[in-house]
Image 1 (cartoon, rainbow, N blue to C red):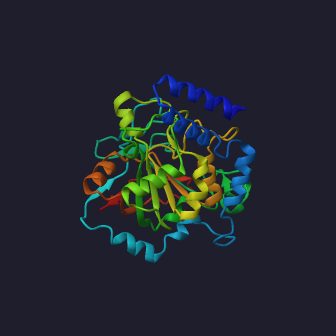
Image 2 (image 1 turned 180 degrees about the horizontal axis):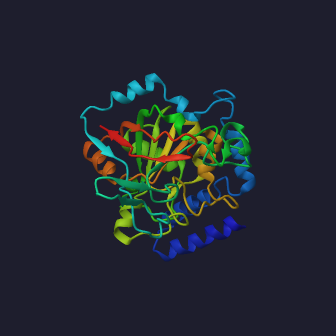
Image 3 (image 1 turned 45 degrees about the vertical axis):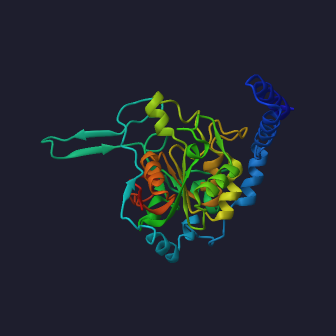
Length: 333
């Protein structure tokens, strides 16, 4: 009943907007398909979690998750993509002012003599560019690979799955998914969901197909919109992936997922689950997430070069027991 009512309202709005009968039929079908997309509630979410989880795939003691897919051969492939030598930073400069999307501003304090300084940042959230460790998100009191919360998450830090497991850094192939460019808009409006068919349409348009061991970077245009209209509560309203895309991400062998916000649509569209994409990626699949990357310059360079694949380097601070790390991710063309 909920789906039928929602679609009916959409159809009335479409007719009022001047759609032709054919346009109306197409829009009606699309609205119906997207509204009913699973998972829609906690029960369906749990079913998907159990179906896609990678627990035990790389051994009972695995600490790396999908990073295991970044092989030596994959790194060599990535190195071959750095043809021009041009680099692009994906880090947004630290924001030091409190705002609707920055509850914990970056702190920069000059010390006596002004030749030394101190940085302080609570980087998780919707402002600072960072990488989530695999101990950051849990489901039913378990982390990725089935470790118990009481064993892993302690007052002294994570005993397993912490960010220092990635001390050697990551080099692999990355693909930019520029969905605003696909749709011919400067940015996606908050609350816009990105589905598997959107990604497949982008692959067809760009010619860059997602492969095993890749990083995928979803551009929603969050920073372009912020520049135009100002900050807003991104945690409550953001464009991003719908949770239904997770089986596709697993099937393609994606190693790391990133975006210019938190990778997932908000509100989540999954009743009873606040961060379904984060939970399915980190806890079920063992996929680290790059949050709040600034993809605007990357979008411009990629469009100019007509290249949507490139080498990426990810080098977190190897904090023992850390749940993640701020970092300056670099794309190389």
